[in-house]
Image 1 (cartoon, rainbow, N blue to C red):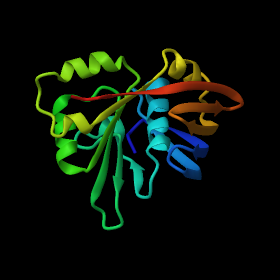
Image 2 (tube, helix red, strand yellow):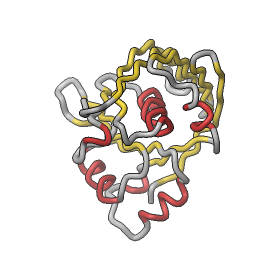
Image 3 (spheres, one colour):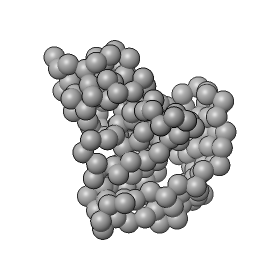
Image 4 (cartoon, one colour):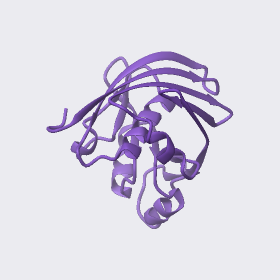
Amino acid sequence: MAAGATIHTFTVTLADVDRGVYDDLSLRVARHPSETDVYMLTRVLAYGLEFAEGIAFTEGISATDEPAIVIRDATGSLTGWIEVGAPDAARLHEGSMKAGHVAVYTHRDPAKLVASWQGKRIHRGAEILVHSFDRGFLEAASAQIERRTTMSLSVTERHVYLELNGQTFSSDIHSIAAA
């Protein structure tokens, strides 16, 4: 846990119809002092949208050699490398060399992010998807985050239905290839 981090607890009901994943989660999320609510919500959404056996948050912003989220199989081998925000091409290249599945969830303009990687080496770049949400969705939803947040996350046909502390939000999930 990062020094000076604020702990947020998310009680999540997950219903991902697209992947057939249904679970109740209790997440303790350490929010670094330099991390915005929008970035933290993007991390929590990425966790839910990628949820699988062996998923875990890393040290996040404090970790220089790990993504925000990892997925490991029963042997401890890295199978998923999930970045949040605006990683550089070198991190994606490294992640793609280490894990079979790499994804990016961003709260920024995905077209600008992908453009910043053009001409740079990214192993299996065409297989890496950059996911984003409708404009204003993350900002509006993140305003409802409290230290203890009750959250319902439903996904149907690549559309997110999110309820945070009684307030409802929705967005399409937009995906483009990294290369």
